[in-house]
Structure formats: structure tokens, C-alpha cells
Length: 82
Image (tube, rainbow, N blue to C red):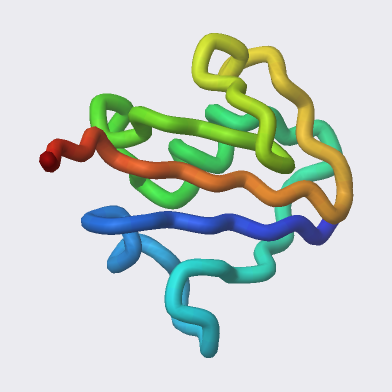
């Protein structure tokens, strides 16, 4: 199935080649869960700090949240600032 992966800040270099700065359309298995994508794109677990699917916070559901066609998975690393 096709879905979208968005990586931000220091995670952006982990995206496959494409035209968008932070978003790529990707193909994943029909039964994929969030953690499968994190593993597939070699995103260090401690760097996948904020994880959303279609704008909904799913950090505590990574191993259970099943993805469906068209979903947008967005991931941010830990950030600091003032």
C-alpha cells in the first residue's frame, strides 16, 4: 500500500530521494505498523521522539498502530530551544 512518511529536523537525511523537503510517498506492507516503518528507515528509537499518524499522537502505540493506505506518518527527533 502507499502512504506518506514525513521526517523533520535531524531525521530528514534518512528519507529516500525525492522532490519534497520532508515528505515522501512510500510503499509498505498491508499489515504494517508504525514501528515497522521506523525500523525500515533505520530511525534510531531514541530519535523517534514525537510520532503522529494523520496528526494523532501515537508514540505509545508504535507496535500496535496499524497503518492504512494514504496515512501520513510524521516523526520528529527530540528538540530543544527557547
